Image (cartoon, rainbow, N blue to C red; front, side, top):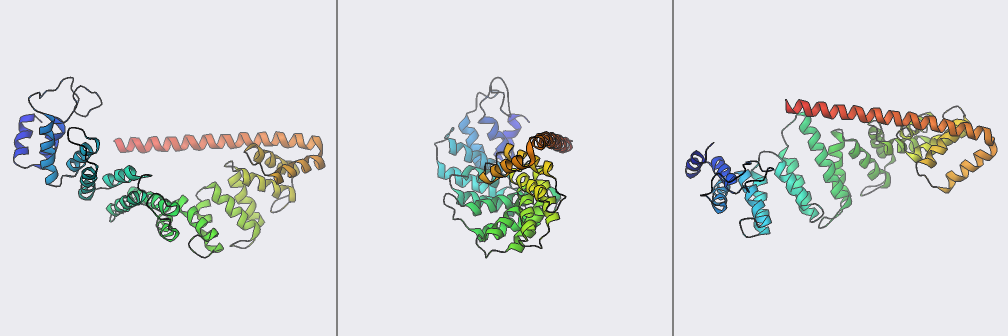
Length: 346
């Protein structure tokens, strides 16, 4: 597209042409990172101020990209006088007129940690932009936004009051769409009674759903609840199963509890070597509780040096197995991401 043809369309009110012409004229020519890169300005007879004029014409017609670009100029004081209030107004109009959620999400990040109320507001509006789209990719995106909004309300922040009940609402939306982390957070809310009466059975339900999606903290919690009969029927076999799954994800507390199950023969055949091995792994993963230290000392004293050495060797074997699984998992996730990126670019 030549400058002359763009200029003619701009003059007749074509918003896209006005935006394109404006973008061309405000460029810092000679910088390779710029979209319209050339070594020298091919249009020296035109000024950047004229570029702002064409962006403004497009913005008056609610051209979202022009509104956003103009907002950016006012935010930085580039070409025009800096005006933060005007910049926000323009960017908000851009987000309102944009077909997708991108500008609202950009505003969300602009305000995050500076004005969390506005950050939450723009995130809420971004979610609204996704309404009506039932595609799998959009459903995943919507759930991730709902989860983040739940986080903001759960923690509170600058200008944003902590509100567990609203957090529960957004976590539930995300959890029912399959978000494992939102499922875990719902479990926490009902386990501790944040904003609601404590509800162990409801907490167990959500912890279990998160555990089934390989969230180690949830797997550990499910192990505890099965072991002690909290929110569900006591079942030490199930407790061992979930402790093991968390332990194999290198959760130190789960490794400690799994070791105790082996030492005591609860839910699993008693095996002192296996139990002490898991104790060693828990210590190696940073569990510093004095009770674990006493458990290790007592086991070593009762079982003797030879058994302790065997347990140390077994711990090394388990650690190698865990490392191998983690490497395989990371490789699989990387391959999945690369395949998704390749598919998107085709």
